[in-house]
Structures are given as structure tokens and as C-alpha cells.
Amino acid sequence: MIEIEARKEAASRAARLDAVFAALADPTRRAIIERLSRSEARVTEVAEPFPMSLNAVSKHIRVLEASGVVERRRIGREHILSINTRSLNEVDDWIERTRRYWEKRLDAMEVLLRELKRDHKSGSKDRKHGSR
Amino acid sequence: MIEIEARKEAASRAARLDAVFAALADPTRRAIIERLSRSEARVTEVAEPFPMSLNAVSKHIRVLEASGVVERRRIGREHILSINTRSLNEVDDWIERTRRYWEKRLDAMEVLLRELKRDHKSGSKDRKHGSR
Image (cartoon, rainbow over all chains, first blue to last red; front, side):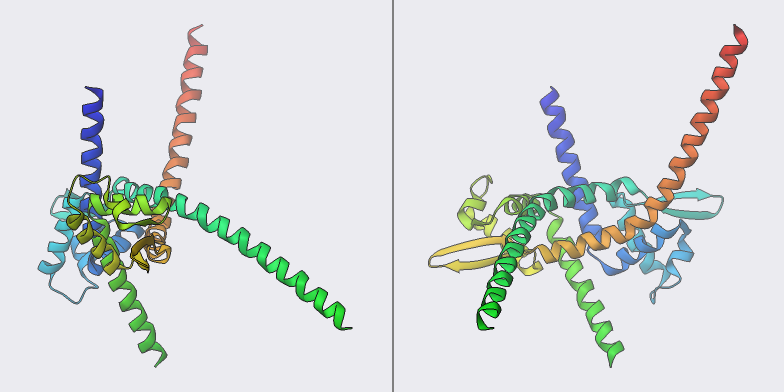
């Protein structure tokens, strides 16, 4: 039973990542997230800087809401949008995890490069010394 | 001229981010990246663990190549796949930049919470003390 639960959890996490990555694959939606990462805002405030209709921006906002990245709450007539940081953290966790491996490899390459440089320098010093 | 170049650069960066995020919006493609982040590998090695045809995995690999996340080089008959870390770094930069804002807000919330807890604790101690 525990294994089934763990699998369900992994499957729903994968589905959330699918939705968030797909939501981020658009420059207008990324710009909306950048705006909301500074502060929460009303729909009309979010839409204002974009050279498109309020309806077009609203469609992008709905994609962001469906992915879980953006949340909407109503205060009277106003619709306030904010970022759900948890969803972006999941994306960040995935990238961090993948990143850790290749950074180890990059670190190893850096050490190798430094050693090669040092060898090269001491080699060129020796040559200079020899030419004197 | 410099402004035009800067705009072109921003537009192509946005297009690259679109492609990379879209490429990451699939669990099989993310699993391929996780595999390649550990070490480069032949196409057949990458395909092996997946319960789908080599042809189906190849399609996912082509999407990853088109997005720039995965690179392929040929050594004789072998096709070796590896990760292009630069493309994932651009994604990571974008998330980091967006993250910095909300983390500042989360930090401020944490400080507030800690203060509230402290006030609450010292309040309950006072009550205990008083009941003795």
C-alpha cells in the first residue's frame, strides 16, 4: 500500500512538473510570473504593460492558474493574483538535482584545467629561465 | 544599432527558454536528461530502461536536441548523447532571478513568524509561572 501511495505521489508530482514547465514555455507567461514575483497584483494591473487585449492576457493567466503557479483570490469585485511559490520550488528542486551531477563533473574538469595551466606556466617559466 | 542587437539577443534568449521549458514538460524527456546528467551515453543505452520503442525514445531525443538541451556527436557508428549545460543554466538563471524576489518576501515572513512564536512562548511561560 505504501508503495502504491509513493507511486501515486511520484505520478502526480510528474504531472505537476509537466504542467509547470509547459506554462513556463511562453514569454508572456514568464513575464506575468516576473511581475507577480515582485508583488501580488490585480488582473488589470498585470495585463496593463502587455500590448495585447485583456482577454488574451486572461487566457495566459488561466494557463498559469491551471498549472498551479499562479493563485487567484477575490476581494469583492477585485481579482488578486499571486505566485504559489511551492510549484516553482518543485521545478527548482528538479533542476538542482540534475544540476548537482553535472556540476561535480564541471568541478572535476576545472581542477584538471587548473593543473594543466599550472603545468603549462611552470613549463614556460623553465623555458624563460633556460633562454636567459 | 547596439539596442537592436540587444533586442535580438533578448528575443533569441526568450525563444531558447520557450524551447527548453517545452522540452522539459514531459516525464520521459526529463528522465533522459537525468540519465545524461550522470554521464554521456549512447542512444541505445539511454533508450534501454524505457518501456517504449527505440523509435519513440528517438523522437524525444530529437525534441531535446532541437531545444539545445542535448547534444549528439558521432564516433564511427556510435551516436553519443550528452547534456549542453549552458541551456539548462539559462533556465536556472531565470528561475533564480524570479526566486530572489519571493525569497526576500518569504524571509520577511519567517522573521515575523519567529517573533510571533517568541511572543507566544514567553506569553505561555508567564501564564505557567502565574498558575504556580
